[in-house]
Amino acid sequence: VREDQQVLGYLLQNLSKEVLVTVPMITTARELWVALASMFSLQSLSRVNNIRTALINMQKGNQSVASYFAAMRGLADELAAAGKAIQDDELMSYIIH
Image (tube, rainbow, N blue to C red):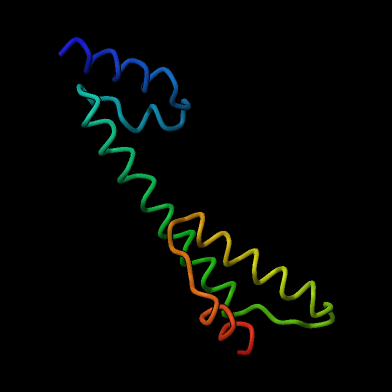
């Protein structure tokens, strides 16, 4: 119990005020961790959907081919950072589309 409260205290001290007000009744480190994971996974899912939409809607326009490929690779890298990496063949499908 003592170790749990130490971990809980450390986590609570390092949360921003905006996040801290969303978890006022948490009493254990596990409860806090689960609540934070749930809260931020929803944001991550939304971000992944936005990146996929950007991949679908990206157009070359008047960009150079190198700039267009770099922008598409950047979006693919953002997906990978969010834990939803796409394979190169899928990225090529987005580029060709």
